[in-house]
Image (cartoon, rainbow, N blue to C red; front, side, top):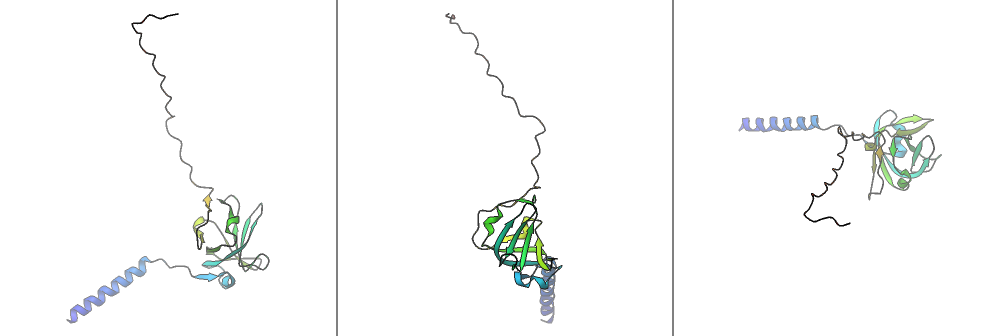
Length: 160
């Protein structure tokens, strides 16, 4: 009986250790207002997009309040994605990444579409990386259609 208890305990411990090894540590979720406490840490910041500011050199998603009172900003540089980001206004989002300090304000620079999650009902926005691989050209040119052969001569005389 003692051996059975020992075997069960060892199996339980082995399963618990193997599960801990395979699970990657998850980033903690924080509100946009709390981001100032987590500079240089990878976090998931949640908030509502209060303002979408599209500039020639950069796009800003200000969370919870419009600039300059916004407690957190998502920064998206041009040429990274193709999307109508104005559709995010009023939506609750999660953005994952390292929180950086810029002019004494917290922000995350979005480098990848996997960093952004739109919460609630889906919206018609598709963020496609502009550096997506292009399908290679075929090695051989497309086949040229074969001309239709003229019918063989018939036994009927031609009438002119």
